[in-house]
Image 1: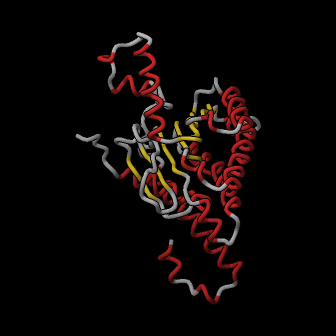
Image 2: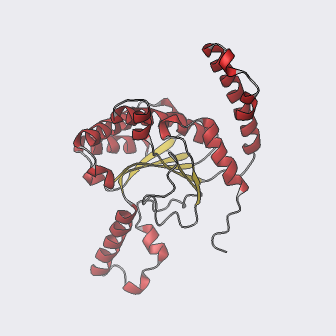
Image 3: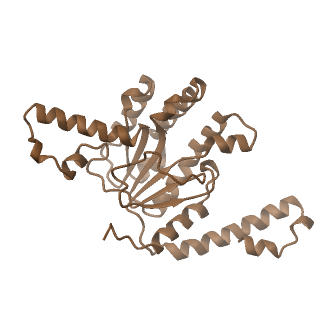
Length: 272
């Protein structure tokens, strides 16, 4: 699309016309991308690190909480793209255990948004249309009681849905998840329920927050940062990684489908 724009004397066009031209070219490119990927192999489980809300806000001269609000709204669009692409399991890294160290005002605003969005799930037609089960993963006990209650209501309302699964990692840390799994296993050993010699990878996996869910095939991180920041440390051993330069609130369907196209071009070897 950028190459096409080079041949248009943009400086001579009215702003409204520029927007129309960009919109047309974007729509054309979107259709081209979809034709390239629609019949290809889609990830069964997609993990996404939602990064860049604060930088997006600062880029526009706004308070950081405005960036979080835009980021929360982007989730709705993104999930629609996932379901349109028939991706069955999505795990969103929304708030880490380390994020609690941010300013009180920012954390309070994020928690307010979290409560609001979990409450909206109960009324969200698409959740019920696609039969999406909601599950929060992380140290949920660290969240404010009102957020914990909103999570319980969302999980209860969708517990019988089995077409799609949406994991929301909130109060989540990859190391914390492994520590919690080890603690549970240690308690079972102490209680005589299992023997030390029975501990293996499969047993540990059964005690992770994501027990019973396949490992992510693809993990996308927005904002240009190229690290996992503790996201699904155990489960990401053989995941394909895709790093996108765009800030999360500004992510477009084009950016997402480019990630899927790149994923489809790769050969997953699982260490072989």
